[in-house]
Image 1 (cartoon, rainbow, N blue to C red):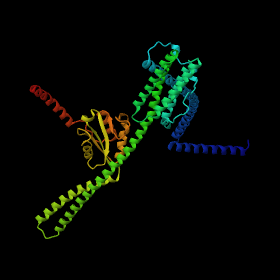
Image 2: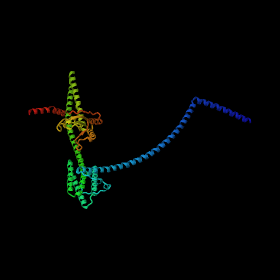
Image 3: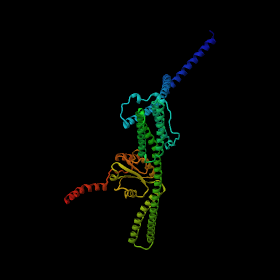
Image 4: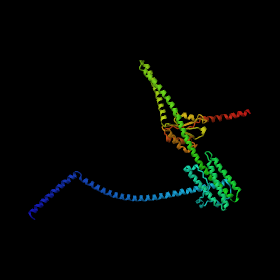
Length: 483
């Protein structure tokens, strides 16, 4: 090894030693500033990141499994919903079939109960599947238009009833084997159809009972004809006419519903016109009241102005105090007039008014209430007007509910009470059969601030009852003594 090599080695060792010292110094500095803790924290973070990655991968696998399960469950739900839809359709079909069967059963039961008592074999009563499938309309050559055909629900009901009639006629048609008997049956069917159309054509509102009686008279007439004719088919014809009467009465009731609905529409129009008339009267009364209030307002203002002018004169302190006191009194009275004027203005310009709930125990009995609306400045005036001549006793007031939309509030109450109406045709008759508790709860739910009086005083009615109890027996005793 040469001298140069030895020198190089010594130099390298010196450099290494210098580097060690430098590293030592740097390590000491890093230790002083917390580098060891930094690396420890860094290692922990790396460890936690690794654990989090593992957990995240596991969660992603679980989510994927859940998505697969959800997809499978959705497919099962869709299949079940499809099955449920089909079952609902089957149920509706079977329900309709059952309904038709019930109607046919009712017609047979009606005929047996009302026309004869006899031992009829099951084979003569049952309706075969073929009878349900076949339909052979036997009808008059001229078909009159029925009003019920103009209303969807009634049209559906009438056609369903017609199907039952057709099935019944087809059922009995197959029982006649000879040509003569078939001809008799066909002629009777045509005649009965014509009789029904004639009765339906002459049907009018409030004539339902008469039309049903006409159907029964037709049945009686044809039963008499059947009884005087061929005795071999008399029993069958009797049963046929009896069952047919049930469906004919149904047809009359369905057609009559048109007239009921027509009357309801007429009454609604009358109610609207009546409401318009009442509103016009109330507006007229409010206008008169407004003019009266304005005259009072002008009078107060003139008097106040006059007194204020008097204050400018040379007056004693006592006189000034008296004038100021009088002015304050007039201003207080004027403020009441202004408030009243504003109330009238609100009633005139908007839908504001009072909904009233009243009863009349002596006239209508318990749990019968009238629910109406008025724009009168004092709603009690309207109640007094209702009880003035049309009923024998005064009305009891259970609630006055002021509303900025009194018409809407009245309509809402009428809608809630609609199934409790006493008169379901004439909507102007605003009387409802409902308990006090139920009515109070309804009012509280709609208008929590409304006051409700549950007491049914019926003073005049109770006094009248008391008078009868106190004096009738005495009067009878006096009459007996006179004898």
